[in-house]
View 1 (cartoon, rainbow, N blue to C red):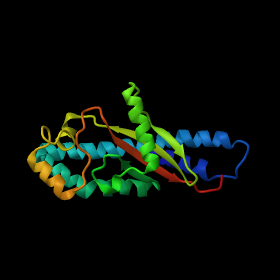
View 2: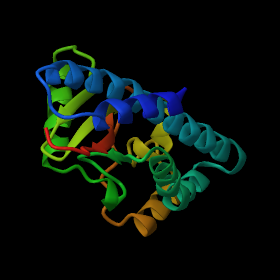
View 3: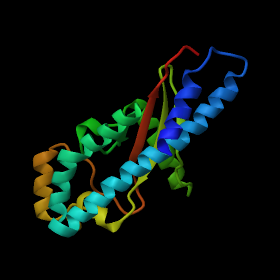
View 4: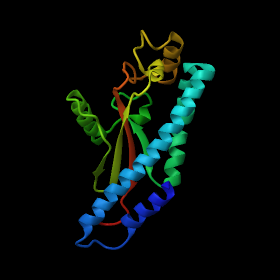
Amino acid sequence: MVRYLVFSLFFVVGCGKSTPDETVNSNMEHKLLLVLGDSLTTVTQTTLLKTLTKKIKEDGPASAVTFCNIKAMPLTDSLARKFKVRLQRVSDKNRNPKNGADDADRGILEQWASGMKNGIQPKPTVEETERATVYYKPILLGMPTCLQCHGDPEKEITPEVREILRAKYPQDRAIGYKVGDLRGAWKVTLAKSRER
């Protein structure tokens, strides 16, 4: 299914010259990227959560920190290479420095956070830049298990986990969350392959 969507997306993005129907093509690209982005991020997040939950059950939360430190980026990178996109998790309160939000990302995160204060749940969105089409999907802290690494450092994160976090991520800002908080965003970037 995902391969079919990727093929369809590249077909729409890469075929032909600009025409008066460019708006239709742009709308199709937008819809296809929403589906592709959702599929890729759902598979990636499901894989990460399944593995983290298993690690926590088997060896405790400290093992989850080590897993994320070593395996999370290679997992997202392997899926990105497979589908020829850039796949990232970004946050304005990042743990890994490589997951820090840029200005455009922060704008999306701020928009979602503002909406959440008014009772509006964030939804995936697609943004166009000069060079790329970018899909964003909110990452909400969904399970109490997540608080063992991302919750209140004095009440929910054990001293052992805090020590490992300090050692592996000295500039960690990904703490102090509650279930339901906006943790960041999945970001799928598809480079534009032709002039518009």
